[in-house]
Image (cartoon, rainbow, N blue to C red; front, side):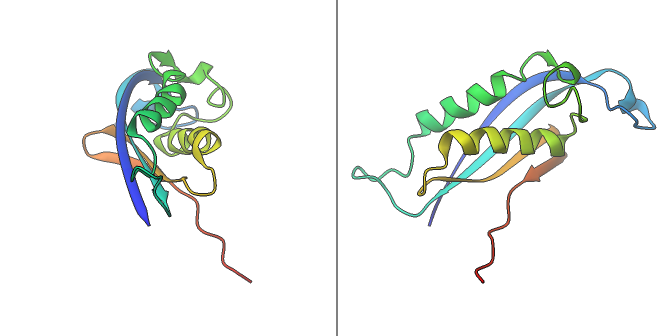
Amino acid sequence: MYELMIEATFSSAHNLRGYDGACENLHGHNWRVEVRVTAQRLDPIGMAVDFKRLKSEAKKVIDSLDHKYLNEVPPFDKENATAENIARHIYNGLSRALNDGNIKVAKVRVWESDDASAAYYEQEKALP
């Protein structure tokens, strides 16, 4: 099994609805995103997936969040734009673009600050 990882960044503002504290107010973050994908085999030139493709697909998903007020961007117009929900949103978008039977998005971690992050991944289904 092979694992590849890229990082990307974006900046955005949000406020947490229903939160009792300062984060209920409008504020911003410089988010860092870590994307990990796995592959069972390599292509004929020895690559699981070209980093260029991985970065390009991540950029497509992340650009929809960059320099935005997240509370106005679906699905965050209905659910809070927490690090947890942002990680799941990016994971799902990348999975649709990349998962192909060999390549699989394994985990997306979103850092809202240098010392606080949340990750999203899906458990492998147990065989019957």
